[in-house]
Length: 255
Image (cartoon, rainbow, N blue to C red; front, side, top):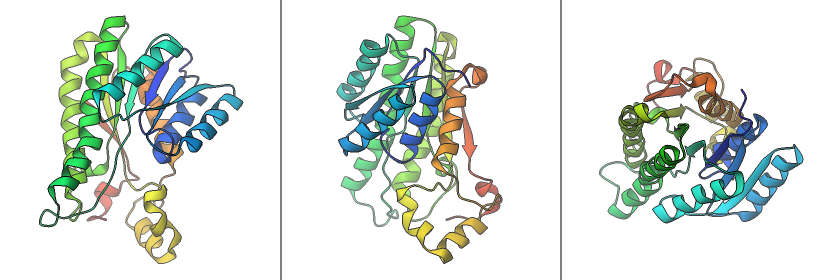
């Protein structure tokens, strides 16, 4: 994958899958704007890691669920790196409640961070791509749960289902302008959100047995797929989802 000269924004980019995406993009030659809302020290460490390896990155504190925050991220990319070539909607939160349990505040929070941020991130990025010319790419980091129900996790599933239709609708709308929109949907990934499961041998074995490839993904495996989608190697892909799940959607009844 060759991303030299490309400028990319990654929301929620200082930890977990987001940090892995930053590393993969930078390794392929992209200059990366790393969005964060907490743990500035982690962002600073990631920037140092990227630059020590010869890459380019800058951390920006911004709330990607607001248009002001999104505009700040995009303007930083333009100011620091000259243009914007790709925007990765990765920021997200998961709070597990069933339909009968979920309260309005929790539902609103999940939808705002997961879906609203992606809608307006896609909008603002597309506007920039069209204004500067040359096309561009939006990558929405979704989940197998955009398509696969998970009882007890209603808000998250609804937000990712919305992201699925955002990708399809925006991809169709923006295709004539040379703007691609693609979702990357991970299954089980070895991130802090799954730390308890990964540390418990019994729970980990149960999870791995539900995955046809019999292993949980590492964040780098998701990051590499995102880098591929951003690259010209994927230039005929849009309005679709790439599932990176080890086959779990077809090999298990649910998590």
